[in-house]
Length: 236
Image 1 (cartoon, rainbow, N blue to C red):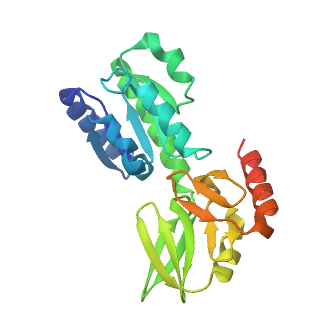
Image 2 (image 1 turned 180 degrees about the vertical axis):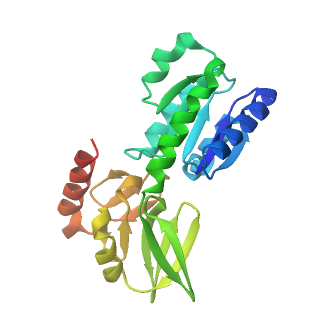
């Protein structure tokens, strides 16, 4: 589990990192924990996508935690990940914070309340599906939710993932069959898209949450729109 702590107070940030590390160790949660006092950095190149959990302070300069959560929610669309937990001493802002539908709100004075949250998220992540990508002589296991889209390139298919690109000698037809259970959408013969990362379907393109624009074949336009709509309804 990848966790990032966001707070403008460097002293508290270091204390929180130690606390969260101890929580994870005591509860047998394997986690990589990062800390930053630069909240806006999460929006640069959609860095937030690299994390499973965001622990956000509310009262920060430049951009507050609630505003940051709002921006991330717009970008991540229907995806649950990253799970947002507000960690704050500003009890009076709890109702405003809840409008952004965080996973939880934890008071800094009651930080142990964070433990059941981390356990529950860890359990959710542990049952997630993975897919084996044959890269040369090795097989890379990739979380389905981290595959953004697939692109045909000659005799290969490139898996564009949150962690980087992986190339496999195969066809999009074969990958379409493999990924059908995970609702991947095929807007063009050379592409497969994870609906988690679709921001918009236009008349000629599929636009992803990071701004990537993929072609949409005219004859597939209607079916792609319907598949995306059906997927969104299923996630409600």
